[in-house]
Image 1 (cartoon, rainbow, N blue to C red):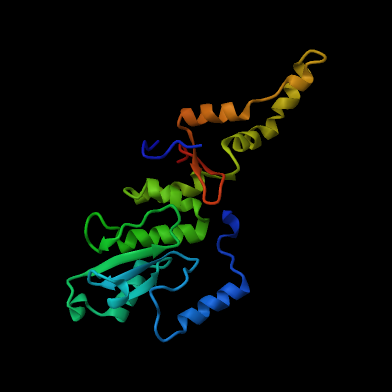
Image 2: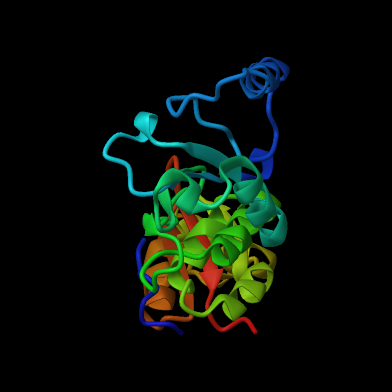
Length: 227
């Protein structure tokens, strides 16, 4: 279990867009001049500038969709902006990011140790598009060890209103409450119940199960022991 993972107590339709929104986004891409102040797209992207801007609109820059192979991203970057020296700059800068959810994209000069690389952001973006925003939470914990990204599918148990709801679903096939009521003395059956919230807290306390606060409410539940 990574000690960095917060022990805190949809995304299936994440990739769906309505026809009107898709048409609006397409119209924006067709404009001759792409404005820095565009409405945000639904897929993860970053805004890269040639040099460090005092004001983004005064510096040559471009939005890059990151849910692609990093080689294609780099090729597009240089095709649009050329070399940094052509703009009197020494390097490219990540100036802004959208669509990465709870994954906090570091801004700054590309290539510095404390700035996310295009390769890492590509992996995170592809994971978000493939699996939904819960992947952003997983990636935020394991960004220093991207090999752990491959464990997401095995570790992720779903989105639930609370940890208690996760435990309730987990116990449902066992019919625990029915068994307890059958074993209870006459007249006490209605008072017998399972404290799912307490069980959830116990599971979280043992660090085997982690509930991460989800965008829009509820929790994303992960089984940390999954390999």
